[in-house]
Length: 348
Length: 205
Image (cartoon, rainbow over all chains, first blue to last red):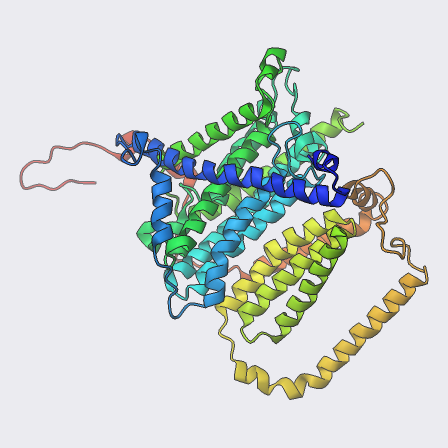
């Protein structure tokens, strides 16, 4: 895209600037639309599993429900509690929302369609997701109210705990792919198993890692069964209790953008990203981003399915799973995977 | 042009937030400004081409260490009057520390400018060997030339971690831990049974 703007007579720097801004808009605007639709899909799936109808009043099949909700919160009054720390209270949702969008910069949508093709893409994602804690902590503390504060403590402990094992899981993927670049990780999965299956997931050594990554990504995004931070039976609405209007909407949008990001990471790191599932030439006729979106939406369906069927974990069980099960197992798998790769001469 | 703008943006924000860390009255604001300073320092490292270090700074310091700071500061009820009362008493010590830091910085920059340290080129360009990415260059050094130092650092961290756990862990006699394997192994046959008690008689368990 930079070349296109350069041909319009701009200097390289300006062309780069303009094309990056266009790229950001090309990702962020469809993403917001996708988030609105995905909230609708989530509610529909949840309703179907509970034998209800779900949203079906606004627009055909209730398709415009999310937009109606958006308009509703937009028209509401923003209430700042008088005891709240005003600045932080208002910054917190902005931080959450911004961070939810930032990670998408390094997600490859197609072989060349990636905003920032940097060679530390995966580290960048880890860095941004480790920042995600702050939106929650700031909200919990700035609200100056006990339930949000409890929730913030829970959420941050949970996110930090699961980030450790996510780090180890990603190390296994990186060892096999030999790079931190997201696009090259996708390329490394081409014909990975028997030269025909695209995706690390079919690899017996990496399949358990994918299962753990899926569960950890549920914990990382605070989806059911790990939605302890907003356990409505214990903490009202968690760290968002005191929020109203657009600030609340920002949390909502950020949360679902994060869920979509985790689905995209599952697809990119383990299921071959924009590659078709099998390495057959006919399948490459379908554009890469179609495969990518299909995989992302499949994983979103899995996330909703889990949300609709699994009861909530208790807090100590959550911590036990993170620290006593996932951490040792993922550490063990780092040793096994690196040992296997060294023994088979993968790095020569 | 963009690099220059980015540099001044990051540099100004780093210094401003570092100053705000010291000056702000609320300790939670202080920690949050410290985090902003870390983040902007990572941006500066990115500009010098040390992207791996920049990411590690964000992941380790901002993502883990500063969260702990924030936890502690939020939990503590800090009395400011008491803190300010100690200001005059601690002032000479503070000045001493500041002087030592200044001298070290001057010495370090002097040695670097004189070319006595082989960290990189004095004009600020990255020291990475051509053709190798940042991660490969650092990994190549860490796992060959500095292997023993690297492993020693790891061991020290392990000892510190074990020490922290030993210090804080206490065995309480009255808790009954959950044994998940036992719960999963339980079958309906051994957990439930049907009885038909006669009228007026209870059930013997």
